[in-house]
Image (cartoon, rainbow, N blue to C red; front, top):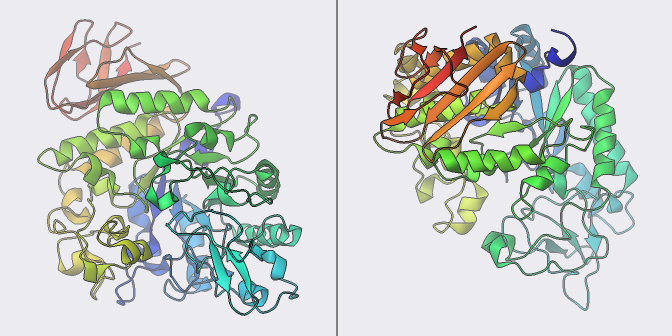
Length: 537
């Protein structure tokens, strides 16, 4: 494949986010680890995964489950050693699987040596590595609110200044206006790239810079209570961010076939901001997460409208990525497929994610239709849940252990898991679904296999068919290969006609066998039916 059709792993492959503490426990301590992921590489490869986004594994006191880094160049002993990481990287590459690390560079842990030095005195050389301020008339310098509620300014008794934290007070923000900070982060990127890491998922990428005049954010009812009812006009998406992205991109471009995907927090700004972080010429982030599908309501027209808005904003040289679940949001099955039709709806979601234009990102367990687990107050590990229970119960439910089999602890660990298992693990698990031909897991495997076989699903154009309130349909076209995808989001039998008219054959379906012909006339669509058709030549 040459030219336009050149295969690029991060564009045309299938990615999977793995939350390391919840994937597989290799040493019986109740927490997943790096050796546990290595042990499951055969399964990951058979699932058709081309890249793993690995949640944070750096040294951390785990106030925010690893998103509070205490040392960027070491591995948290909870997950293993650097030797374990090197082995995972080597063996993943041996399976043709790439590794994307979580780069948490907006802030560090307050236990990081940099911050310990920074807060030790006002004249410490690393004082300016973080954001410090005297305040105004005995009060914080601005009205800025943290993303987890409360203010961003924390008073430090030792040096009698405020430091800024966009999230928890244990996560002080780095000062990205300081060239030494930038250089240290870029050198850290090179440290991991030199090891062979294939890319980075950049946490809260658009938070790096803050207004240096400390202007107050305006009131916004729509922003909600945990954003302090304010529009974050001066605390994210600041002038100069694209210059930083160009510098980060230059680091990656110094290596072959590396990438970065940005988490662009866009609660108020919408998908246009996520698109902007790719750059008009595709020169900034390779990919940018946009969460319209995550926040959409169930329904063909709802998903269709969200995709229309997103695709229309992507720059000509940009490339979309698509996601339905992650470690911060309730699982897609819980949001969209709870109840009697879970399996049918889960297959509709699977087909949507894996046949759209763009890079699909699965979330571990999504392939077996894992729901959120039920968390009681005594089970809460997430600091958000500890702070706001019962109004907000935290993110533990979507981070529950992977369900490998119906045995003790779902085959995840020999010990009691660090979070409660789902109640349904005896039925919803990998072992059981591998043995059931029509399971959600085997449907995902068929979809990823078809995606690898058909270039139109990897790199073809995306052409919407006339809309229907319950059916979403579109064509994927690449050179002489023409596919048609039809997804019925309803529990009703409906009438549908493929466009353009002609003879189509089933490549993959939930209610029809491969090879079944679909003719010119209207045909009856079954409840929650999925069809991937190919135009007969």
